[in-house]
Length: 325
Ligand code: ZN
Image 1 (cartoon, rainbow, N blue to C red):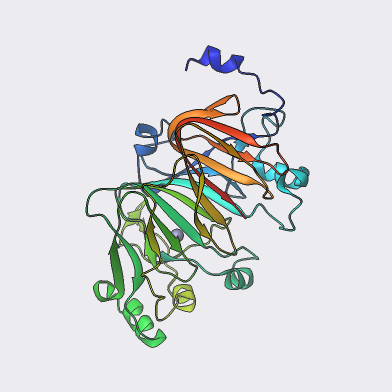
Image 2: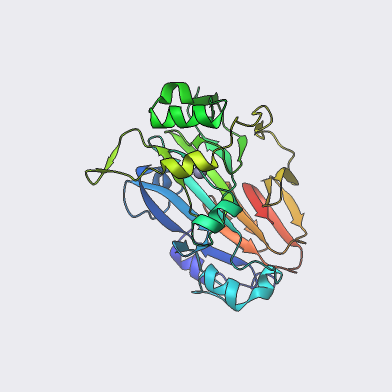
């Protein structure tokens, strides 16, 4: 679509409440250029690792790019217009949706739960996160869990840098969906494109960073905190990874629902109606293109359906990952 026709698009009444969002980008030592090559994003450098598509965090907030709230950040709107978000009782927007591309492995890391983060990280939220694998190489693996049987053994393995015996790897493929509870050791390995839905938190404890240097120095590790928060022994992993490649068309397919979020996959191939009865609903187009009512959207676009919006019609040929609390 050319710039001219884009400018002619009017947001009509049914669309004026939808928050179409401009993402923010984060450079990472494990990043690359795929967020531009694959998603056409205007990234700041060839070391870009994260697109924060739906974000209202102190470290980055998406900006409304169209409609009556154009120019406002999502963070501002959450405070100024709580009715758009169902007047929920949260002191901050509860979720954060990212597209992540890793050229190299991320650090081996773990996130605290709400209780630990509140006490030790200036009242921050803890972090549960989940990944929908958009793309990966054949025979790809992620780090998920660990092999220590007791906290003592955990301490010994981490402090003794026994990484080969400590970490546990599992195979993944395109269309897999993975829930990472707080306390779970994990790494998004190199060569992955992931849509991540998570609690609105930026607290990560690095267990090990492969002895890499950033600007000549190793990145900080959080050995004590990691040993504090890692779940020992690890939880049963058999139910953590589920494949959602071939889901039903033109309906909302639930991939997970827990106390922090519900996440759905929508494969739009024709027309479908979304009755938005949650406090708000996040949507990210991860492939193809189509329309939201009469507003065109394509791969890489993120938007939010606010509270009490009239049923929304999706048409076209696209896959959307949606989330709500
Ligand atoms: Zn993580």
